[in-house]
Image 1 (cartoon, rainbow over the protein chains, first blue to last red):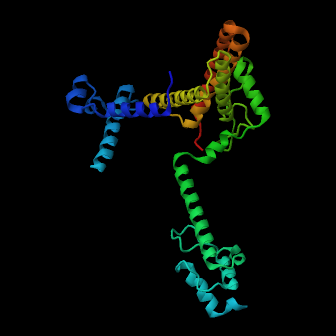
Image 2 (cartoon, rainbow over the protein chains, first blue to last red):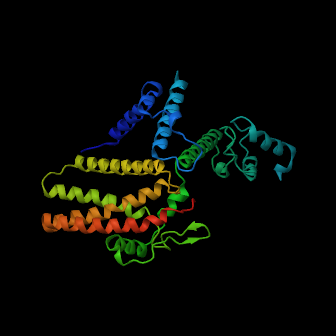
Image 3 (cartoon, helix red, strand yellow):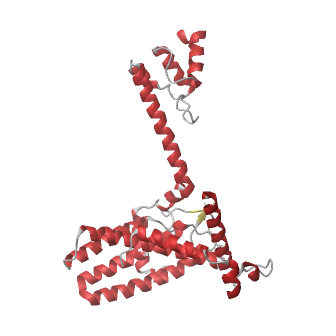
Length: 71
Length: 260
C-alpha cells in the first residue's frame, strides 16, 4: 500500500465532498439524520449521533460558504 | 556638532517618512538617524534606510539598495513568523523537544518494560506541565521523530538484504509512514470530537503518543532481521504488550491537561 501525501489530499477532498453533498431534505430526513430531529433539549450529553449530525451540517455550511464566495 | 542644527534635524525627520533617495550622502546625517531606530514594521519600504553601516558605503545607490533589501527581508521574516504562528505555537513545540540523554534512556526503558513503574502522573509546576527533562512521565516529540526516521532507514536495510532495495523505495516508505501517522492523528481527533470528552489534548500530544509505537516497530524489525521470523513474532508480541500497558497507564494524564 503505497500512499503519497498527494493521495491523502485527494482522499480528504473526496471525503469532505461526500459529506457536503448529503442533501438535508431528500435523504437525511428519511434516514432520520436531519438536524432538527435530533436535538432534544439543552441537556449535557449530546451523544454520538447528535455530534455526527452537527459535524455533517457544519461541513456543509463551511463548504457552501467557501463555494458561494467564489461565485 | 552638525546635527544639532536645523538642517540636520529636518533632514532626519524628512527621511523618516519621505522618499527612498537620501537628500545628500553626508555621513554625519546618515549616522545620527540610527538613534531613532529603523522603523521596519511600518509597511512602507521607503522608511528603512537608516542603518549604521551606511557610513561604510560611499555610493548612495548602494546604500539605498542595501537598506531596501534588508527592510524587505525583515518584513518577509515577520510575515513568515506570523503565518507559522497561526498554525502552531512554537513555544508548545519547544516544550516537546526539551529533552536530555537521561530522559531518553529512561523513557526508552519505560516503553519496553512499563510494568515496574509506579507513579504515572505528570507533575505540574504552577499550572504548566514540567518539561520532559524534569519529569519522565511527560510526553515528548524527540523520541517519536527519531524512531520514525530510524524505522525508515531500517526498513531500507531490510529491503536491501532481500535485494529489493532502490532509492525510490525509501522515499515511498517514508511518505506512506508519514501518511499513516497523519491519518491516525486525524482519526484520534475525530473520535475525541465525537465522544465529546473534555480533554485539552493538543494534536502534538496525540502525535507524541502515537509516535511511541515506532520504537516497538524498530525492535520488531531488528528481531526479524537477526533471529528470523520467530524473532520477529516474539519481539512484536513483547513490544505490543508493553505499548498497550504503557498507553493504558498514561491515559489518565490526558484528562486534566492544562493548556499552555
